Structure formats: structure tokens, C-alpha cells
View 1 (cartoon, rainbow, N blue to C red):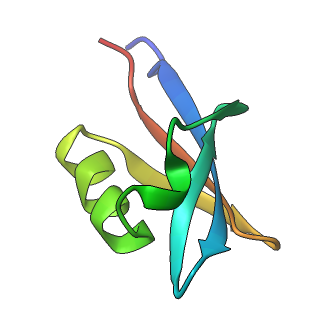
View 2: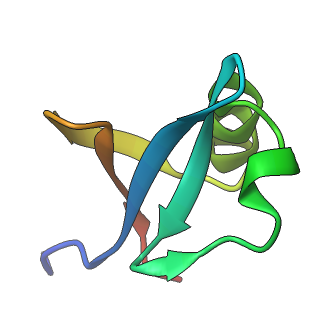
View 3: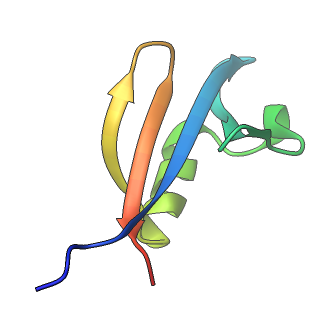
Length: 69
């Protein structure tokens, strides 16, 4: 049996106005991040794309993984 291969995503969020929003994904700033969806909506979108939370760190950093296709 072969070992599973994973791809990873690192999400950094930040407070903007009265909502926490995703700001960086894999080190790249999201365009218009401060006007985009809130964190709960973005997390639902990631789940729909097959991403699963693998770990969380202090400072609003979330690590996700999903099987490589």
C-alpha cells in the first residue's frame, strides 16, 4: 500500500472592520481581502474544495491539507 500524498494550504486571517477575514493564502495576499468574505464563509468554501483543517497556531494561522489528485 502506498503512502498518501497531501497538498497543504496556509491561511492567515486578520481583523478588518468588525469581521475577521482571510488575508494571506500560502504567503500571497488576497486581492481586496478587507472587502471579501468573513472567515466562516471562507472556511466553508475551503471545505467545499476538499480542504480539511490540519492544525492551528497562535496569531490566526490555520493549516489545511487535502489529498493530492
